[in-house]
Amino acid sequence: MNAGAEQVVEEARASLEEGDLEGARSAYRRALELRPDDASVLVDFGQLSFAAGDTAEAISCFGKALEREPGNVDALRALVEIHRREGRRDEAFEAAQSLAEARPADPLAAIDVADLALELERLDEAEAAFRRLLEFDDDPEHDVPYAQHGLIEIEIRRGRWRRALDLAVDATRVDRLGRTTDVLAFVVAQVFGAGDRPTPERPAIADALARSRTEHRRHHAGSLD
Image 1 (cartoon, rainbow, N blue to C red):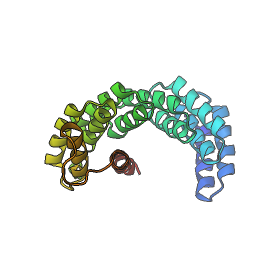
Image 2 (cartoon, rainbow, N blue to C red):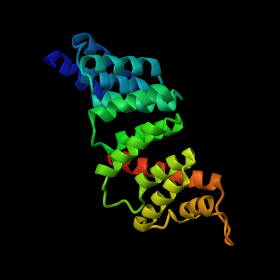
Image 3 (cartoon, one colour):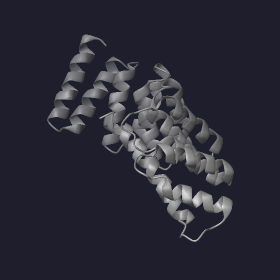
């Protein structure tokens, strides 16, 4: 970045510190006139535009940043979030896949792929993402086998109850908070039939597994703050 552009970016940051969002955006526009191919400036301006509610301009900036710098992690992560909030799940999934390719050992990137694939009923892609998580997401703070829960959910959706049972038994063994107990009871009832004890209903199990995925994502998203 040349000296003129650096000075303008500093002006933008000063405006942000004063709470002047529009002043910061104006400064970044001037920086882009000086450095139109600077991916970092495009990403910063895109984030400011998104914060200001100008989604179209934000998407345009992130797209241009990726043209200049394919695999730009900040641009891809922002596009995942924007498309998800706007309900464009296919576009969010595409951005999430690109992010996972750029960051193959990033748990949050894999979680985004898995979550969006489940929303789109792309179960094979969801399974691949959860299996990647099993390989490298060994955070010692995990008291719940989140990735295993994802794999169980996939097998429940497929109706492959024996496979779901094997996964639920394995998950129960390592679940330090007992969150898999009801899931196991539900799957056992599908395989062997309902017993004397009340069995959780499928909507309750779906909600529990969805909460598990949300908690898993929140844990890793918090590590970016």
